[in-house]
Length: 184
Image 1 (cartoon, rainbow, N blue to C red):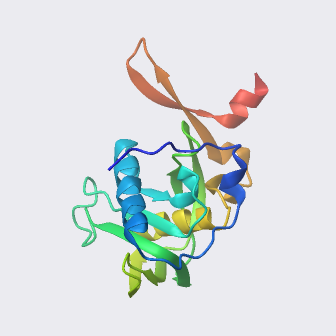
Image 2 (cartoon, helix red, strand yellow):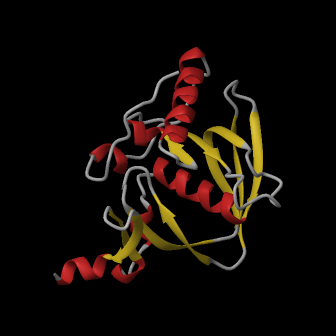
């Protein structure tokens, strides 16, 4: 396994629509393993192939355990080829999102709390996942990547985007509104 380079905002590959996977072989399995290692190394909860510069419809998602102990999917890893959202339910809920391709920023994004996803496993076998809450948010975020959409595209108010800043003197992180950065 290997840690791959994550491409950043500004790289045109993040804005391309990804191609469907047709070959389910050892190369695909190796890529999925490398993506899982990369996601974990970066302390992420999801990663899409375009984020490592590969234009195919493959995502890895890992539901955190910490803070989600009551969730039946806590700690569960999902690897999905050709994922599609087949159904979204519930009234949209605002929640903070970040992205490994936009490090140092978080923003408030509205997403539906229930998502049904269909796709394939690494052998090409059909799978279906019903995701709720935070897991539904992660899946929607990662599938957006496959369509060239970033979380910042869902933010219409600059006040909802914040930069995470480290204060070395205090040895702590704090959030700074992006609007404040624009003012001075």
